[in-house]
Structures are given as C-alpha cells and as structure tokens.
Image (tube, rainbow, N blue to C red; front, side, top):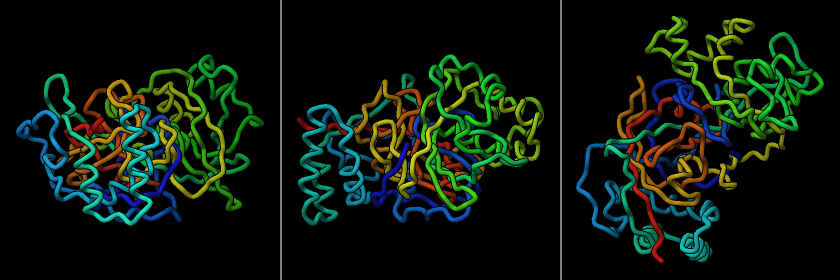
Length: 377
C-alpha cells in the first residue's frame, strides 16, 4: 500500500494494549505494512469506526433497502465517510460505481453538510448483506503502515538486507535460500532481522536512516511461496505460551534470540517479499487498487468476493484477543487485498501510519458482519 489522508469518521475506542498484530497468524495485505512503533510517527486520526455493535443476527433487510436500515446508521459520521468515499471512489471500474463517484465529486466541489452526505448515501445506494456459507460471522482484523529504523550499511544489529526483486522472483526459492545467496552489494537498505520479517508480513512500510533521511519500502514482488504464520508453531514448540503469541511477544522473542535461532523460526514462513525504495511523501500507502488508503475507512478484501472501490458497512464487536478494542462499526471502502483475506465476510481494516495506529491494529480480531452498498443504476 501507500497512503492517503481523508479525515476518517469511525468512532474507534482507544486501545488497551500494545501491538498484538493478529495478522501474524495470517498473512498481510499485499500493499501494506506492520511493525513495532518507532518514535516520531504521525498521530492517530481523530475520527474512527463507532463502538457498540453486536454480531448477533439482526432482522433481515428487505431487498433494495436503504442504508438508513443499517444497524447504527444514525450514529455514523456521514460527512467523514463521504470525504473518504470521494478520495477513494476512483478505484471503481463498473459503470454505476463510476457514475456515482462522479456525482459525489461534483457535490464535493461545494460545501457539503453532514445531512447532505447522509442524503447522498441514502439516495444513491441500496444495501444487501454479505454472508458466509454457514451464516456465521466472518472476521475483522487490522493492519497499519509501520515505521522502522534502517541503515545504509550493515552492522552487528542491522544485518538483514532489504532486497530488490530479481529478474525471476518466483524462481528465487524459499526464504532460507534467498537469504543464503544474498550479496551485500544487492541490498537497498539494512534492517534488524525481526523488523524486516514484520515488514515482509505487511508488504510495505517506512524506513528512517541514521542520517535522518526517509524512504518508503514498497512491495515489489514475492517468491511465490505460501505464507505460514509462526505464532502457532512457536507455541507448539514451547517458545511462547499459547495465549501469549501477540505480535509484541513474537517480535520480542525474535529480538532476544537474534541470529541463527531467530532465523530458524522465521524460516518456518518460506514466503519472502522483495521491495523497492520510493520517496516518503509523508502520506499513507496506496492499496492494491492503486488508491491511497484512508485511515479507518479502507479495508483489504477478497477480490473474488468484492470489487475495488465498493462501499461496505462493517459491524464487529467484542474481539477475540485479550485486551482487544471494544467494537467497530461504520462505512469503509474496499481498496486493498492480502493473501489471508479470503471469503465474503472477511476484512482487514487499515488503521493508519505509525506507532499509535500499530498499537490499535494489534488489538483487532473481531467477529464481523458486513453489508454491501451497491450504487443505484
């Protein structure tokens, strides 16, 4: 991903714990980042998904129902949702989606009130539920754009090379093979091994070098291997307690065992991501749709079930992680994807850039209900 900045309107509760990156047991979004926060990162957006939903079954909405029928619709920040829609709707490729996007952008040329925004959604879209095959809730997780320290040259701590994509990345072999064959002159940058591992899980992130310069490490290619989460095998081997495989715990273990022991654990995930270095524009990353992501308003979805640029209403309560944030509810846009994001009721919420976003992203692993907002022809 890369990034955007439209004021989000989700009312998200403040997190109670540090980074617990639920995505370590999954796979991250193609274009994204993930990591432990570093100083000097951007503040969290002020306006997020609203708390208070329940994933218990609700009365089915009639065919062609208005968004006004959605649970919690009246509590939404419709203006912030409208601003995020205008910023991201260019990703839509279907004629109806493009037509409604153009209408929204014309409307945005004048002063738009919250009631104008609400009326726009209620008159230009109808809703339908997204459903799992068994009717049960799906899953909401979250990701963010991490920021990491890096070096132009290796040293005892920063000894993991950030590699550009070779001519045939899918023939590069496993993580172990790639690392064994890497030559120092091929490195774009050098990172702590555990930081690079987390960066590869997310797919992109931001680097700050010792001289103060910054760059964005953008996803360039991968080796074609299947992602394997290391949380479960670490618990099975007794390296971490079964209820203590948070992102923080995994990263701390890797840092404490840096060297051959940590490399052996990281090698359990054979998937390897190659990068390119782009200038850091100070914004957020772009998702797989090629549109900058708006914090708390963009989700990664399964493109087999959703189209980029589609609007969705998400409702996720409680959370399965210890210390999880309470609830998430609101309008979001499908702008990204990831190898672990599969099924019609599966979403990864982009939380933003930097340490505060990372803290909250780690608290999200919630039962999810979703509705699709379809433009009226």
